[in-house]
Image 1 (tube, rainbow, N blue to C red):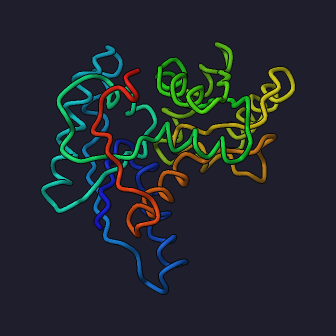
Image 2 (cartoon, one colour; image 1 turned 180 degrees about the vertical axis):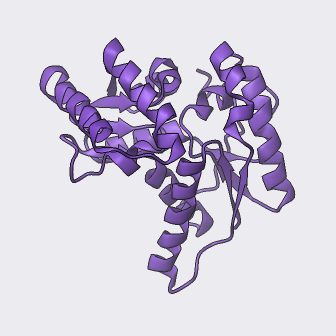
Image 3 (cartoon, rainbow, N blue to C red; image 1 turned 180 degrees about the horizontal axis):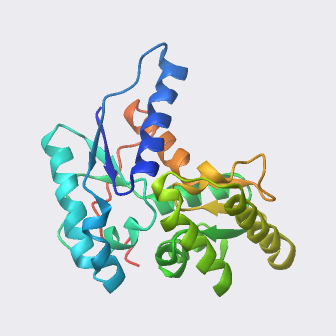
Amino acid sequence: MRFGILAHSAEGAALCFLTFCREGFRELGGHMHPDVMLDCEAMGRIMPAWDAGDHASVRAFLAQSIQRLADGGSDFFACPDNTAHIALETTGPELPLPGLNMGDVIAEAALRLGMTRVAVLGTRFTMAGPVYRRALPAAGIEPVFPNGAERADIDRIIFDELVEGVFSEPSQRRYIEIIDRLKREESCDGAALVCTEIPLLVTPEVSPLPTLDSTRLLARAAFDVSIGKRALPSWRGGPVNGR
C-alpha cells in the first residue's frame, strides 16, 4: 500500500517522511519500508489566504496536492501539518484520497497514555481553531491552551524560526517555561506538540510534561495502515462525526 504525504511545511513533512521510513527499517529490515510519496507546494503561496481566514481557498490548494498523490498511485494520505487540518475539516468537495485525521491520531495517543488535561501548543491558527477543541474532548480529554502572551511567543518562534529550520536555545527555554507553567498552574498532565516542527525543538528529555509528538505519531499511524496493522482510513475531508 502506498502512503502519500501531503506536505504543507517542509520541516514537518521531512520529519514525517524520515520517521515513516525508519519505522520500516526497524520492523521490516534493512533498507525496507512501504512505498511513500510526498507532494509539497510552497506554503508561502497560500499564506495570504491563511491570514485572511479564507479556509476554502486553503482547502482547494491542498486538494490539488492530494490529487497529485492520487495520480501517483497513493492509496491514502496524511498531512503532517496540524494547522492544515482546520481547512481540511471544513465543508467542501470530497478529497481525492482517504486520509488520516491528525487530531484524532493525537487524541487516541493521549487516551492510550491516560492523559486527562492536555496543553495544546501550535500555531496561532491551531491554538485558536476547532481541531483540538473537537478531537480531544471526543476522547474524554480536556484541552488547555496557553495565555495570550504565550500564544504570541509560540507562534512567532514557529514562523520566524522553526519552519525555516532554526532551532535556538532561547526559544527552547521559552517553550519549556510555557509548558512548565501549564503543568503547575493548569494541572496539565501532557503536552500536545501540535505544530509538526515543535518536537524538533522540545524533546521528551527536556519537556516538563510527557509530550505528544504529533509528527511521529502520525507517521507511525500511517506506517501501521501501510502494513495492515491499522484500517485504511475513510475520512475524505470535512467535519468529523458531523461536528
